[in-house]
Length: 191
Image 1 (cartoon, rainbow, N blue to C red):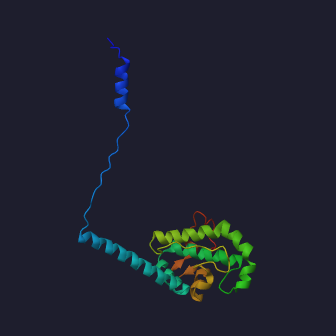
Image 2 (image 1 turned 90 degrees about the vertical axis):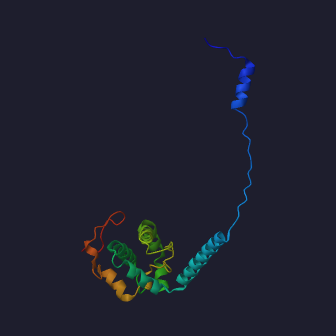
Image 3 (image 1 turned 90 degrees about the horizontal axis):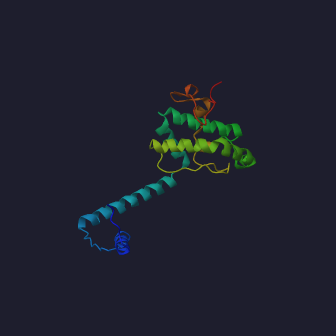
């Protein structure tokens, strides 16, 4: 019933199954047309325009950036709430619009403790949501130094906007009505 295979048949079968693959290199020549060269030029021009726009944004003063940020998030209550809660936590540490660098330098260790526990998370959540909603195009960093916090430094905000955010009401958004979730366990604007 079963046919007995001799050793030479087994070796021949193994050689056929387990032979080394032979690699073949195929060189392909591609002709580039004038149309494809135009695409490359178009892409390079686009990259150049993006770089120029980025340089212009870097040269814009922080106060103008804050004004455009507030204009873009004024109809998004969650973002306004996160920003106001961030500024409220900075004020609870002792960092507000009126601090000079010497006062902020004295608050270094208090700021760093809050930085690690809460501020960094709030800052990252705010900017991630801004990028998700296409309000921001690049990554923002919260500095570890209380003298130079970053773009969301209270001293960068106009006085009236900062006072409005601290009051718990910004334009037509009542921050007391927002239910906090996640790292925002308590609404600081409720009495």
